[in-house]
Length: 306
Image (cartoon, rainbow, N blue to C red; front, side):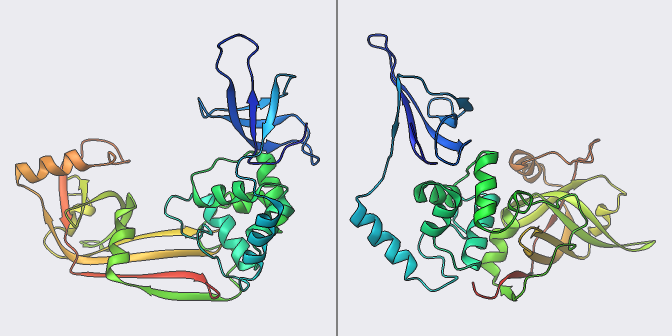
């Protein structure tokens, strides 16, 4: 028995009327595709190590004919180096950080999915799934992918998250882009921790807070007399960002606007109902501060060939 990543393992029960079990092969332990396999079962989504018995067989879902496969490979090969192509996973709406790193590194090296999959000894369909969805590949899969992309598992996983930000190697050809207001609003709404800049009696201060975006305004909870509470009654700067140290990329958004204390009971109830998380600092933080941006600006660093 030999399999590729992305194939399905089907186990037929010898009991009459029993339902068969199947799952996707997400990890290989031998280069030649022989057992055992890491299998993600379709009924539980759990991943287990499987040594298939005589009641098991391999299905190759979505495998085209040789002619169709050659045509698909030819189409990908004809794309210019660095071109991601439709559905290549770079920025796919449901992709994971890992998938985006894989797709970005592949595109940066001018590799097609077909070539990358061949190097990593996996099905192109599985590579596409990994780049475009919330996938959880096995360590064996990550090792093969890292080898195919001439990088490390540590880098693909976003290694260096415990290091001070900005210690990674800069891109060889970075590109700094200004973000429009709509994209800034979108990015602002995807995060939960930002930094608020305030003036205090001891001088300027910047402190992190848990926040939500409700009805277009940035809202966070704090306590009276705290540093974040000093924002009330003045124009305030609020910043949020995201950095991918492994890929030396990232973005930042700056919102500027008047800050006020929320006192209306209905508005406070709506904010409490829409809060995604409690303040990490703990304690009783029942004072809501709302910042309605009058200015939204942002920047993004990407490879120059994107």
